[in-house]
Image (cartoon, rainbow, N blue to C red; front, side):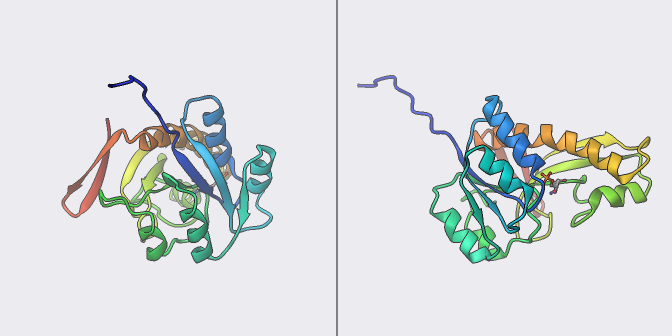
Length: 209
Ligand code: GRF
């Protein structure tokens, strides 16, 4: 007999970050505010002095300081994770690492936030590049990670004006505010599996529903 009982499991994520951890905080705050349904089971940093580690400890979360990708990978694989979430993790993940989190639908269950409208300005210093080119607008991208540098399937983008910004600092400040809203909101539908992913030409496209 159908008991009518619905068991909803909370998606388990680990966050990898190298620095200040403002995106980590935005994610943790969104979870607290119940805007994002997820459990952060581990926060990993490759840099022992990264501020993100203090922020994670203050919230009582498990932390791991580790540089070696093979060790990070095996620590993550023990956790029965739904997704790996990169939040300012300053290392390029090897193909072996990415493949360890592959989903049968053809992408890796690793999400990243990048401070540009990809495919424009992959790699480092993207806000600076947009500012120095005197672009009127730039943006932020949330994407699945593949073994290239910021080349994986795009999940969400948000564009904003920088025409009146007088310094890179101002661009970054405006960008981070956008990141902190876009990342938890996008993670929410990714973790709830509320999207379809399909091939168009050689590329994978992600569409929320
Ligand atoms: C953010 O700009 C993010 O887009 C990029 O690295 C920066 C990390 O900032 N990938 P924080 O550590 O989350 O404050």
